[in-house]
Every structure is written in C-alpha cells, then in structure tokens.
Image (cartoon, rainbow, N blue to C red; front, side):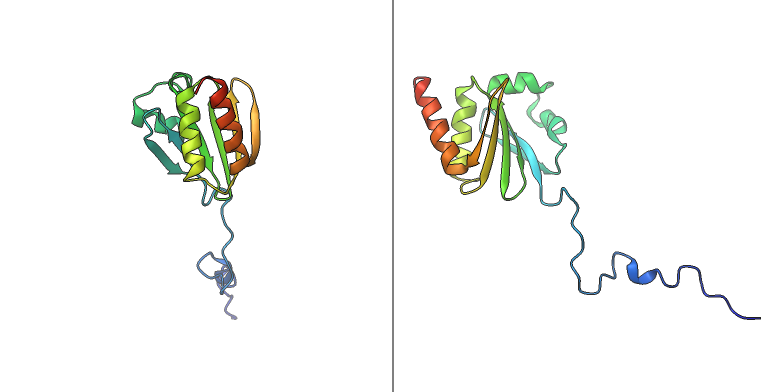
Length: 140
C-alpha cells in the first residue's frame, strides 16, 4: 500500500504568510483615509472609503445634507490625491478648505466637488488660487 500525500501539501507555499521576500499585494483601499472636517474645524477620519455616514454620529448629525449646509467638508485622502466635497455657498467650508490645502494637503493633486454642482481639479496651488478668488468675489 502506497501512502498518498496530504491533499494540501503543495499549497502551503502560496499562503499569505509565505510570500518569500516578495511584496504582498495591496488591497485597493489600503492607505486611503476618509472623513469630515466639521464647521468648527474638528477632523474625524477613519481608514477606508465608505465611512462617511458612520462618522456623522461623532458630530451629532443625522444627515449629510444638514451637515453640508452648516459648512462641513467630506474628504477622501488617497495619499497622492485628495477628493473633497463641500457646499458651494458656504464661506466656512471654503475657508477650511483653503487652510487644509495650505497645510495638510499642500503639494497634492486635488479634486473638489461643489454641491450642488461644479467640479474643479488640479494641483493644490492652482486650486488654492481659485478658492481664494472665489472667496474674494463673495466679499471676503
């Protein structure tokens, strides 16, 4: 009688803890952070992309629309690229966006969606110039 090998004997080398010096494949959302900048300037963020609704509870808000109307900013930071969403009529949101692009996200590619319509994208410096002009036009 011959002994048969264990059915998974050759599989051990393909298990995740055995990559043999090679880089492990990254999950598509690895390193991505999403969150909110509140009208008060407070920031709440968590890893991943679909965490916005859960984070509203930290600010005591029930709906996104009401939070946007007060001047909140929703963001997704993917490392080299930042996506922001804010209410186009909110002076507070524009001021917080300018502050974030001047400090935290300086030198990155930026995409801003103004609610209910409008989209600008480009380098942080170009977007900053646009936002400063927009703020001056509103009487700032």
